[in-house]
Amino acid sequence: MLPEGTPLRDISPRSELICVVLLLTLQLGFCLHAALSLTVTHDEIWHLPVGLRNLREGRFDIETVNPPLTRMWGAVPLALGNVTIDPNVTGQDVGRKFVEDHPGDFQFWYRWGRVLHLIWPLATGIVVYLWSRRLWGTHAALLSLLLYVTCPNVIGYSSVVTPDAGAMFGFVATLLAGLWWRDRPEWKRAVLCGTLLGIALATKFTSLLLLPFIVLIAGALAVRCAKQSGWRGVGRIAVQFAIMAACSWLILSLNYRMNGITTPLAQLDFQSEGLKGIQQLFSSMPSLPILVPRDYLLGIDEQRRVMAGQHPVFLNGQWSLEGFRSYFFFALIYKTPHVLQLLFILSLLSIFRWRRGLRWWDVAVILLSILLLIVMAGQESLQLGVRYVLMVFPLMAILAGGAVKLLNVFSARARQMVMGTIVVLSLFSLRFAPNHLAYFNEWAGGPIGGRMHLIDSNLDWGQNLHDLKREMDARGLESIRLAYFGTIPPSVLGIQYDLPPSRSPEPGTYAVSVNFVMGRPHGVTLADGSTRAVDFEEFGYFRFFQPVKTLGGSIDLYEITEGDLQEYNAALQQLSR
Image (spheres, rainbow, N blue to C red):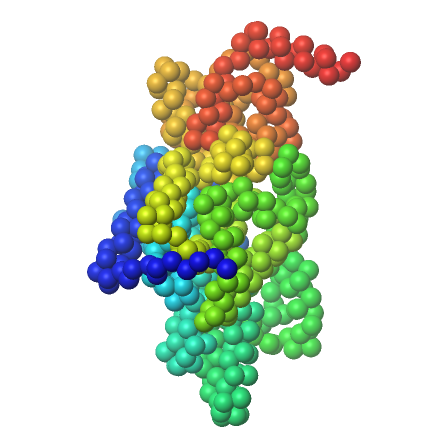
């Protein structure tokens, strides 16, 4: 048994509020820095204009792979500014056309969308604090909030207009509301949980994983009430659960303006095997209405179809078209700050010592959520970044707050030293600002070494094209040979360029996205505005050369000389022997 020290001193409500505000302000400042600095990212280019069309036209079939809530919210400044948009383009081409039609001010509008989008990480921070405070106490809650607001992944993916940060908030907030309802089954708590569940479902299809947790909580609550009040108590829980379901359905349907909720299931043209099977199951009821927005169901179908396809996935130096079951486990190992990892583990260990009075349901829900997200995401072949399980980071931070109980075994001076070290290490995670998207921890080798483990949106999401333009201006380069992974046409930033030679190097100055350096196949925009496919390892020969500089972790700059070329050819000859 470790000796008990003096308990931590209480914090006054005023000091508590000041600390919370300061920590959230810290996060807001770093998010704003990233939001105003980074180039429009790969997927972001279509989310914002699609959201604008959702708002204006009430059409949700333009691009259905994601629900509309977060992108409609980000598009509010564009709607208020009467920004024009071509109504004749659909799918992901909406983004490219929007940028081409607004070459002078598209960056301004994307930045405004990003600024409005910052409501999601701030709201999640409040949830993290409330949940950790409920679970561990005030000191632990402040520690959890510190770990959350200094997590580079949260800052990076919250600073762009994509659904990930909104889904993070909806997921964590719904779980907490469900536990509140379990503590005290009141009507208003059921309404709150249902409302948050509807918000979560309207942000990202990943939030469907919340449904088994809510059903589990409701079932456990019904069993408890049955023991206490008999069938009358069970009936009360059933009615509250129905109200909760109705609230979530209403919020989700309102986001789609109730479009298509009476559409017969038999009339939908599904492409995925799963939904085709459901449709076949109810084939004897051709008039059965779907009762959910048509485009929500079609979006699930489209996502399942995409997920069932093959996608090039890179993990620890290996490529796969089917993905890796362990992908997100390793992604969290490489992308999570070490201080969060350590405190998370220490908190788990402390649970076995201070288990009296612990809210075991909270701990179980957090751990099961993390496990379910990692396992379910690992079953899919579309493994393109840790952002798919972004909600794991606030959940880890909540549980990691419990490590503060270990401070009781130290003297007051030792506590100050330990807490000071934690604060310094947490802030140290922000040293790559504003390039939080490319963050890798020290064990992974930072952004430079991280490419040997993970690529795609973990590292290179097209976010540093502005840095390349500034670098060209500083070097006096009028043009460059460029292979850029992002979806923004480099010409709209005034970059003159040609594509690097395919598979065979030549002397010259080059800028190459790290995804291409590591051999990823994709598409690339040519100088005339057209696009062409990039084959697997087409620009992989750049790995032989040492870049003179790496911009933001995502674009390598090369100066290849005749001497470098001779060394390359000699190495090829040596390998061929």
